[in-house]
Length: 294
Figure (spheres, rainbow, N blue to C red):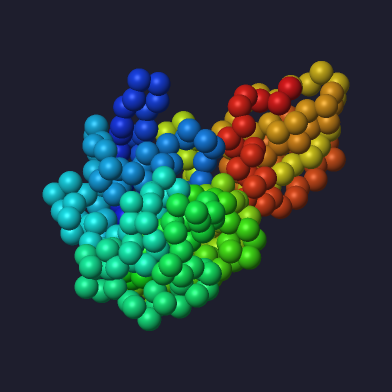
């Protein structure tokens, strides 16, 4: 898949206490894209709108080149959605849920479904109401993956899963995109998993995208800088500079290397500057925290 799987341009959605957007977001075809952000940032709202749950107030969404309003049925056939809010208890048992959903999708892969059933430790006779939260999440993933969708949208799919189960899930996601014909958009607070398994990431805060790009390139773009200044000195505000912590004349700041800030810090009195690489979690915490460290 060489074109973009999902394109969002100028997307807005207004609520009494929250506004999403304007949001531009691009998910390349054949990628695993991680959408991250703090609670209430707008991740779930954006993903719901992609899948036609709710009506945007402005902008456009295209999935596999199809307009999400004009071609909603086609998109829902080509894309699958997984969320902790999905509830399959009405079918009573796992087997009945599988048979019901399977009937809507000619491309359903029975052999793949049987393998996932075994790997996820589910059986036809399991009562859905008595499944653990993690097992219900696995059932939701099984029903989505067995369709072999072109686009898989996952909202917090590893909630309630132990470390072994999370490893199983991400292994299946990697297999799903290895032929470059399928795309995964995943929202998760598991930043370590996102850093290890995704090709691209987008960081959203207060309804707007702060960063987007290849995961390795985005993380490598930033450094944590530790340095000293004369007592009482303050640094002027500057794009690409985020104060993480200050203790008297000792500073910890996040810097965007594309902004040429190492030299700028020296010019503004920083001494003994030490730059260290960051993890995605370091980057996330620094960029989404409230206010500056004093």
